[in-house]
Image (cartoon, rainbow, N blue to C red; front, side, top):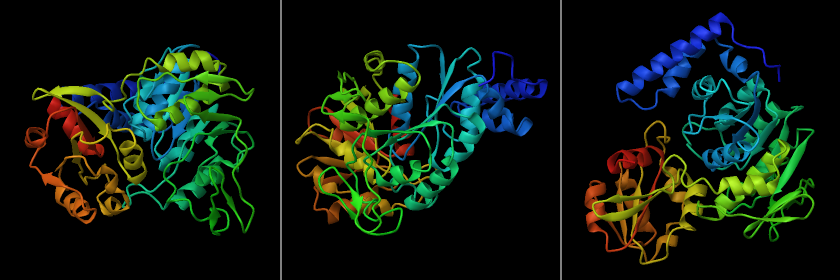
Length: 412
């Protein structure tokens, strides 16, 4: 990290100004936050802008298939105990969105940056992070993303010899393989509910053995490392064996795992677990996720699930039957246009719930639910689905663009 001198050249300052102007114009036109288009314009004018903006920041990068937006938010809250933070809190996690976010944080000490899995190595080169958090890898956006083992290999090559402290999930073999090329790794026992992308060894291709919470390859000896941090029920266990209570307003085991990783990251920056975890309680929702909203006189809880691993975790936190559930799936470019992943989701976990199905690809989902022997109704839109649901709070689970559609419809 450089000193406090201004790292921005006249060209960089022009790029920042132009990017902000374009972003403002995009917002005024009702086309979203404008962060991505603003960042693209800024990087056209100065291709080195991201590196310049990160030069005076202590940065942490967060990457994963699931949970990176929430974990980024939790880390940002924790690090605010030690100084001002700039973060791409709304999830624009490719270089343009990251550049746009950092351009708005001129007084920040820390940069807490969510990074799309495919861009991690490049963003790490540009930002010279102090810490990188790796949470999980699983199948996602099958038409765009590489096969998970290839992604792990790309991470492994990109992080080899990195000076950053890597905080990595010891329970995900793909993450362990990716992080093992780095000289300084802190292992966190954060758990792994979805295991279907990690039955073959990423090192040799052999069959992975998974007795209990442990895992190892019987052919090459690649195995689960010993963690120094762990999630244990409602507590985080630190490297000294002290147990710190997790008090979150966010639901579910997955968010406790995110908090455990976030506490380990905060410790790298000198923020004690007790302070970090207390600050995480402030987070009530993340970009609309977990919000309970009023719509047509009903309470709707909005839940985001983008891929099989995410749906599995989400099913574990919804209220039990006969709570009504609305499912919404699109297949636009931001979601991935391939919906074959629906067949990897165990929808029998919804047995007993009244189900309504909406979204661009509601018929694809209806076929999947029919095969899973679920009782459901296909509806044209949210209004019709809410009207069809029996009394009680409604759990609404949607993938990425379907979730954004829902937020606009309910005014969230």
